[in-house]
Length: 562
Image (cartoon, rainbow, N blue to C red; front, top):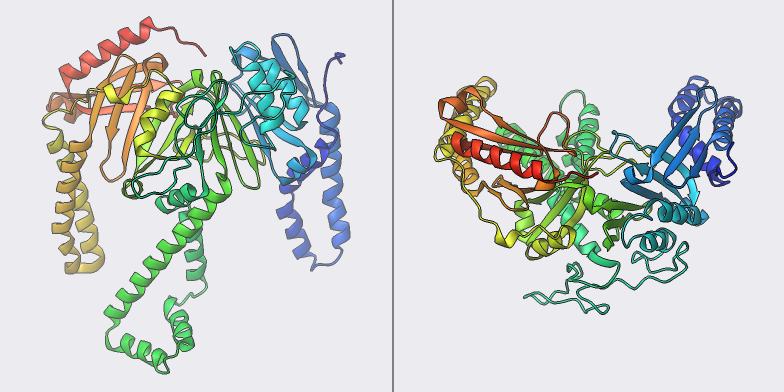
C-alpha cells in the first residue's frame, strides 16, 4: 500500500452499513412474518451481523490517493480494482449530505467523468476537510477556481449557501457573492404588482457570485405547474379501487361524507339520484374524482419540490457553476460550463400564467434513462439523470440574462428565427387526423354510437394543434449555436452551442421524400441513447441540406474539448 493512500472517514462504515441494510429490509420482514413474529432477535442478528461485517471490510479495503495529476481509487477483496482517474477528465465532484451527514460534518462524494452512466467513484463518506482538499487538487488546473472550489466545499456545504466561509485549502476568504450587480447585495426589485423578486438574475460581481436564488414561493409555483405527484396519485387510486372488488368504489365514501354533513337526507338523496339517473350520478362522481385527483396531484408536487429543491442557489465560481439545494438531504453539484452540451427552456400554460420558465441543462456523462429529470439517487450514489436543473423557476424576462451569465456567447436577443416549410401545417394536420380517427373508432367500440360523437371535437382538436404548432415552431442557426422552438401548449426551446455538436444528419422518411422535405438531426455528447438533442422536422430539402453542410463546416473548424 502506498504511503500516501487515504482511508474514508472513520464513521464511513456506519453509513455503508445503513446502505447495505436497505437491501435486506424486505427479506427480513418476510422471514419475520413467516415465523409469526417469534424469534425476532435471532432473525435480526442473522441480517445485522453480515451487514456490519461487510461495512467494516469495505472501510478497511477502500483506499484513494490524490497523485500529482490523477486520482487513484482501490477497492475489493477477492477481486481487487484500481481506477486511475486523470484530473483533466473529472467533470463533477458532487456532494450529498443528509441530516446525519451534517451532524457528523461528512458528505457522500461522487466523482464523475464522461466515460459512462455511473460515477467513477462513490466515496461514502469523507470529512469536509478531505472534500475541500480533493476539490483543490482536482480543480487546481482551472483558471480562477482553485480557491473558490476549496472554499465552496469547506464552507458553503453544510453551512451557508453563498460559500463565503473560510477557504480551507487556500487559507483565505472569498468575496461575498453579489446579487444583482457588483459591489455587494442590491435590494430586490419590485415588479409592476409591487411583489419583491428574490430570484433576480445577478448582473455581475467579482469572483464567485450568485446567479439565481429560488425562494420557497417559486417552488410552490413550480409544484403547481408540474405533475410530480402523478405517480403517487395513480398508486393511491389503484389501492382504493382494489379495496372494493365489486366495482362500487365511490358511493360508500360519498355516503359516509354526506352523513357527516348537516343535511339529514343527504345520503338518501344520493341513493335516490343514483336510482333515478345513474348516468348523471356517474358523471358527478367522475368529475369529483378528477377534481380531487388534480388537487392531490398539485399538493404532492408542491411538497416534492419543497423537499427536493429547498434553498436552490446557483453560483458562478470561475469557469464552473455550483448548484446547492435540498431540505433534509443537501446536494452540492459542480457543473463545469465547458461541459454543458445543451440547454432547454420549458414553458407550460401555467408557466405563462406566472410569467416563468424552467431551465435545464445536459452535461457529458452521468446520464441515466432518457427523459428522466431526477438528478440522482442521493442515498445510493446511483446513476444521475442527464437532465439537470439550471433554474427550476425563473422569470421569463430574465431568461436571456441568466443564459448569458452561464454561456456568454448565448444571445437570444439577436436571434433571427426561420419558419418551417410551407407544407408543414398540412403534414402535421394529416398526422393529427389519423390520431383523431383512431380515437373516434376506439370511442365507438367502447361506447357504441355515442362514441362516434368524438369525431367532430377530435377533428377540431387536430386542426387547432396543427395550426398552433406550426405557428410557434421555428429554428435558427447563429454564429454561436443552433436553436429550435417546438410545441404550443407546452413550449420548449432547445439550444446547442456549435462547439458541442458531435454529429449532424439529414433524415428523410418516405413522406418527406414525397413532399420534398427533410429533417436536420443534431447530436451532442450528452444526448440520450437512440435520440437526438435537436431534431428539426418539415424543412425544404434544399434548406435542410444547406444547414447540414454549414454545421459540418462550423463543427469541423472548432476544437472539441472535454
